[in-house]
Length: 259
Picture 1 (cartoon, rainbow, N blue to C red):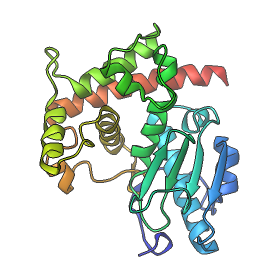
Picture 2 (cartoon, rainbow, N blue to C red):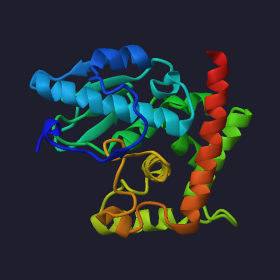
Picture 3 (cartoon, rainbow, N blue to C red):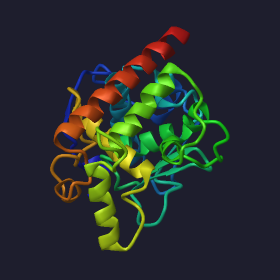
Picture 4 (cartoon, helix red, strand yellow):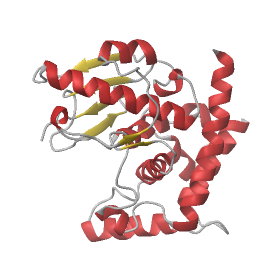
């Protein structure tokens, strides 16, 4: 079923006074570097997707307590809808292009995950010295890259610590253990990569917020992946939510003062 024919549960404020949106409006409001629409996307699909995107990004902005510049990563992030993705992949972030792609008829619920990949990549060279161009901050942290001292960086590294390690030492967290087990079962390296662990932890943080938007995120509580422990659970989930809440709250205030 295509996006324009589906309903996505949402419980949040009215961002548009019941007016339709457009990708041109989304680009202007958030200052994305570019927005590209695939050639096979119909005008109806485009307009419906723009409205869903707009609400999702506004909801994410409220959850993170930050300005539009945070969502577009200071205008460095590009969006693609129905274009630029990978075969068989509903949503994808490309570090080389600094672009977030969403497939035309799939991918709803993936926005929070892919946005965090973009953020994790964007923030790497601001948190660590000498990181390669395609490295994520979470991966740099796990490899003991040289940190850039800053109170905000310290809070982000605390997020990584809570996600990847046990609270009482350097042993892998339960989330990490479940992810390694799944990778061994499937004969791959995916779920236990630090950038994937942290993106799924971020999804859980967003889904636990007071605002609910299933086009933005879903599946961290009731899904096959959640049942296998691939999303944070119990006390670890609470600690992660607290760490992300403190970090993005402080980051949002810092960015707000710059506007």
